[in-house]
Image (cartoon, rainbow, N blue to C red; front, side):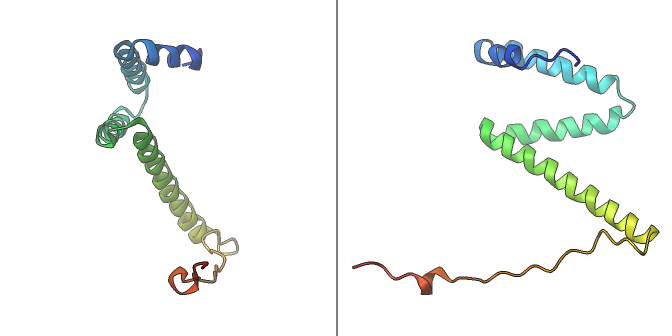
Length: 114
């Protein structure tokens, strides 16, 4: 979609949700059909559609899809770290810096004002 107009799509979603959904599905299908990874993308779109249905609200849908993307990113990063760790012993990207934190137990620290 070279000529994507966010304002036009937002207006359509507000004024005619059914037409918005039809156009959205048409654009998605067009993008999937023109890809070399049709099978994989159809599976991914099915997963996205199921997450949207399960969410019940647009905000929950956004959060679910954001989580889905971050999970995929973490998996990809882990794969890259593993690959780089195997191929290049001097550069170990998978090593994580040590983390520490002081744990504050609120139940024992809290003293109400009288």
